[in-house]
Length: 88
Image (cartoon, rainbow, N blue to C red):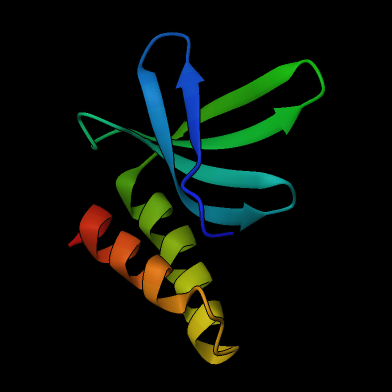
C-alpha cells in the first residue's frame, strides 16, 4: 500500500488515512485541522464514522507502526513518517 488514502466526511470534509486499526477499521484524521480523529468502518452502503480521542488514534497508529518495524515491512518508513507528521 504505497498510495495515500482519503475519504470524504459529510460534515468535516477530506480525511486522510493515519493507520489501519484492524477488524476492517481504519483511523482517519481531518486533512486541514488535523485535530479530529475518526475510527472508520467501510460498509457496502457507505462508511460508519466514530469520533475517537487523540490518544486512542495515537495508540492505533503506534501499534501499527510497531508491527511494521517488528515485521521489517517495506512500508515501515512511510508509516513512521506519517506517524511523526501526525502525532509529533
